[in-house]
Length: 215
Image 1: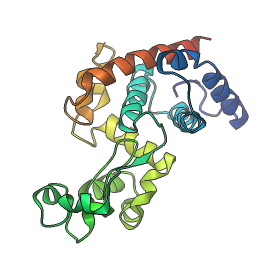
Image 2: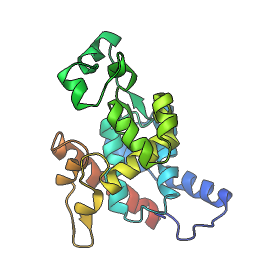
Image 3: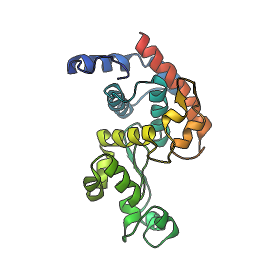
């Protein structure tokens, strides 16, 4: 666990710790400006998931995960859905080159399996594969909107980033006892697209998290 050492801590204690953590995020506001209530709620939900995650013990990994969400969700923090008119997603439909790469095989798959969640998973193949890895392939395929549930979105992001479920690259390839490479860690999600921007954000968020656990 990232913020507590005892996995059997009382719910009330964890809730109080989360409130205290949020209260200590003044440095976040200093770096990025005032937060809307929606941002606070989304960030609170994500921090709660990280706090309870036994698999995430490195604060730097948590910082990079937060930086990734901040970028992918356009600084809103709750899981998001890819925007655009339905016709926009026709380019990803069955029978198109892009659709074939995404494993879309049925009419309307481009829109049905459009980007959603904290890291914008797209395509029938990714929904099926990640759902199977989490033991919920049937629910995700039947109802892709489940990826907008913060708990589900977090499980997808955590598995994909820790286990290499998105590109084959994983957090431990770039963040370990021997070093921390926030720039190339972008390869976990999407090549080096916006790598420098997310690197900078991860560094700032690492400082925020360190301040919160030391207070």
